[in-house]
Image 1 (cartoon, rainbow, N blue to C red):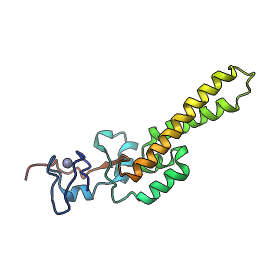
Image 2 (image 1 turned 180 degrees about the vertical axis):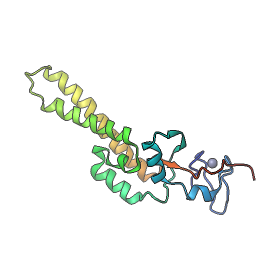
Image 3 (image 1 turned 60 degrees about the vertical axis):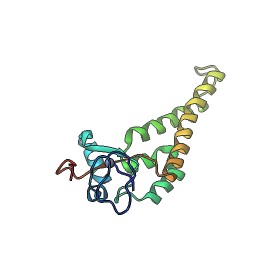
Image 4 (image 1 turned 90 degrees about the horizontal axis):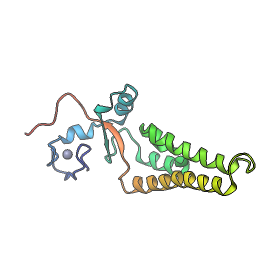
Length: 154
Ligand SMILES: [Zn+2]
């Protein structure tokens, strides 16, 4: 398991993260649902972005969303990373728009090709990068840890 607070690897039998002293119980109760609510309520300071997959995120669903709909940022919306999702979708739309735009309209054909290529590439690159990261368990998912107490040395 990977500690959602500091990213340290935690052995199976351990009860605490050796680095930040976060208890395993708190880690296993880390919630993405709570994180999405916190983001909506503008309480981002409660949210930790981590490679740990919390119990309320289905990793298979996340991967399938990313493979089939990742170009639209679907996997980002699923875990509440709205900004990243919207940016991907915006890049894709700008890219398509620049290809579809009538060449006599505004831009020189070459320029519109470059712009379309850059935005389209940014979207596709992020999409494939995220598929790879989900497979490697490196895709960052926002979670909220049980916040009744701060981790302490015990
Ligand atoms: Zn830790």
